[in-house]
Length: 388
Image (tube, rainbow, N blue to C red; front, side):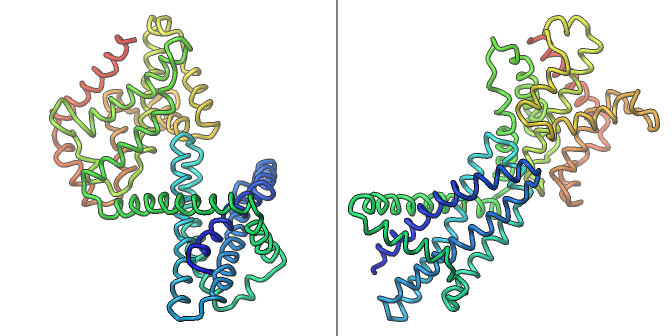
């Protein structure tokens, strides 16, 4: 078995196993875990699937080595098999992040289980090495059935050829996706301040995109305007470009955490809070735009689901700023709302005291700058009212 045949077999393993595992195991188990409300159960299924796939890769590598007796071939084939496993995990991570750009729940899932994914990948590489030296840990009825099925499919006259081509294309795909993912990770480690800011802004903008797809005629465009355009303008006014002079607070280049999506949700909640005050205090505006704050919340739930960060932060602002909810604490003056919002963004992006001081600069002691920012914030909200 030469290297090309070996790679084709690895591609076939991934295609056949992926298809069967998805339809026979993952879909039914996902439905079951959804019904019993056990979201993390899918992680167990993923771990078992990884064991089987890695075992098959190890057994296929040993099978290929039967026909290649030199030490060089042994090392080469073993490294290739491990590399394919690593690139497969990297490719899956890339595809998950691509999908997550349109599904916020997927972002939550990825972030919540990031450590598990890292352990699973490292454990899979270790398992692969162990299988090469101790094959008995991978020998069981299911793995033997898969191995026999793969050889049988590959030997079929037409289907085998098509599956073989698919195996080659699959290997090329995971190689490309894996390389992209690796470079994106390396970029995060070796990026400069400008790239760091770009990553945060990109995540921030992606969180807004899902609220910007409503047309003029569907009745939701005004709500979409506040949740996307106004949210972006407010954030950029403070942290990107304040009156053409660059960022008023150089937060993004001093950030120690890349949480652009969280910043977007906090900002959207803050914007909704401001709209709530407009609707309460400016009766004519409510008649003009023909929606209420419940419509905002309904759209957020429609897009993000019942449990989401925007509603959580909106309730936080209500508890912090609303006189009726804030009877036990000193009431925050409306002029200071923007300062509370800024402090939340600071806490979200920076957890290092030195970086925090660098980002804030002399802002805390500069009363004139604070007043200017407060006025700009009020003007921004007034300007949006006139536009609608």
